Image (tube, one colour):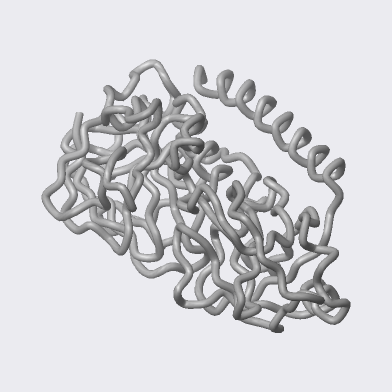
Amino acid sequence: MSIQVEAPGLLSTLQDLGRFGYQHLGVGSCGAMDPVSHRLANLLVGNPQGAATLEMTLAGPTLQFKTDALIALGGADLNPDIEGEPVRLWRPTLVRGGALLSFGGPAQGCRCYLAVAGGFRVPEVMRSASTQLAAGFGGFQGRPLKRGDLLETGPCPRQIYPALQQRFARGLQPAVALDWFPPWYQELDFLRPARLRVIPGPQWPLLTEASRRGFLEENFQVGPNSDRMGLRLRGPRLALEQPLEMISSGVATGTVQLPPDGSPILLMADRQTTGGYPRLGELASVDLARAAQLRSTETVRFATISLEAAQSLFLRREARFHALERILAWRQTC
């Protein structure tokens, strides 16, 4: 089972849920920027939630499937099509061998995730298949995809979605999608302005009162130099009451740092492991997916949230994932 890369797209990398346990050695976690879309796409094709998916940014690749495959797409709508037929997101879809999966411009969001039943077969490095772009390891040869790359995948299980498989066997179209889909797209409502919740950090009280108000009451815009390392935000210039010299300390995905220029940075999946800038707060983990889907020039607002409330939202989301996993395990026998 394999997939040929005919065109690589803007930035297409293999990612799983991250590389953990090595930050003390200076190795960051990496992983899918939008873990919700990543996990959902995997569940839809019967993969473990942590299996590697192909993360595609803004302009997706063109991929030729050498054999029949069961896929699912989640996250941003990059206008996917198979042999000219539009592909719907959040649905398990069967693709015929020889067919081309292509993407147009982004209609909504920034990052789309492709899961393939059987998973992408790449070696794990430090217990993860995620691509570490800065160091050049993990994923597919430690780099974004290039034209001519051949991605190996596991076999497409024939026992999954038997009714869908029967329709596919009878049809002539290049792809067949299941009509049912989980309503999780509401978690990433791209039409609703992004409002991200932040747990105040150790240097939050050191901001001037005007800066605290500005952070919570004014709009920020995602800067064009944002990437997988972090979102650089343009908006009101924030300042501390007094200059502060800090010793570098550990940072996490979702840390909001304040550099000397007063424009905050929201650290993302490819962040460094330590930082010496003031830490204004930590993004609630349930909002990481929405942050990952922000494009350059998009507007975002911030609100504070308590640690207890953020933990409650996380546990509620995980309970929904467990429930969906059980539902899909049943539907995949139908």
